[in-house]
Image 1 (cartoon, rainbow, N blue to C red):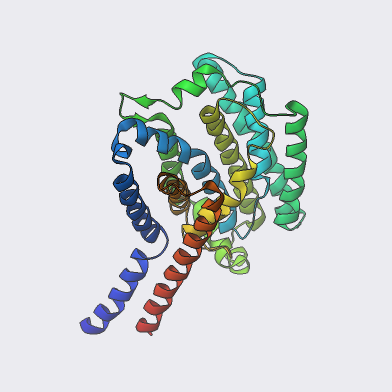
Image 2: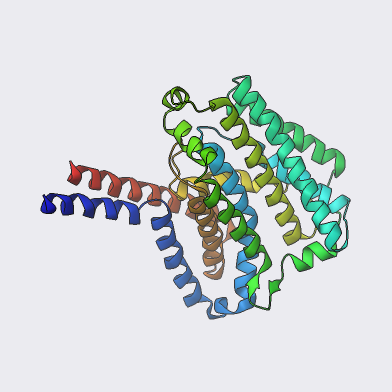
Length: 327
């Protein structure tokens, strides 16, 4: 009995380590070692802060995307929400800590409002998520162009300086915001809502039969994702200190790549926000490694796609191997 249990346990442990968060953390460490080898100054606090600042907008956007993907949806409005919040921050800067807080609330409200529309269209009107969120993305991008028709504007100095600085000269402020975001999800995941999100993604019919309000949970998933997109736009504005009506475009495809790289199933029901955040961090770090290696930026997308394919295939292979041995 104990021998059989041991045989079952080993493949299960292997599958946990080399899939999802485990695999992406290992990949990140390997890339970071390569980065430090090429750029010894990468260990300096300034370089670390810069790396975290560059990572946070995509990481938060990927977290929102993962939430929707887990409930078997796709949210293309990410690009539009980030673009709108970015131009609002640049065209209507509010100075000082109070202004920064007010701007944050505005960004969250913009993202949340778009999420409400998305959730209503998808959960209650049964419109496919790609079609619904494509429509809201187009509307948001149109609004962004009305507010700011070309790159420009200036984000409030308090936001661009303080939110890209570090606490006590050590910990990046943006990293703290990201840590709080992930920490809140880890708490929410243990609530009825968090359990329902995974239940719907795994089997919507069974979730409904067990008493879960599928429409409400899916609706809230889109609302929360929208709020996270708004936060991503806020942090992107702090990093760039300027606005652009197309600022969210590069993050859209990268958000899906980060979600998949983190091991979140695009068919729903499996994955998590932390793994998606690490997927985003890995993609940004890969850009740094390629740049420090002298590789042209034109090839960055090729390398990112190749790493994504290898990670997904490797994780799937080990998962299949573990299940095969268990059988």
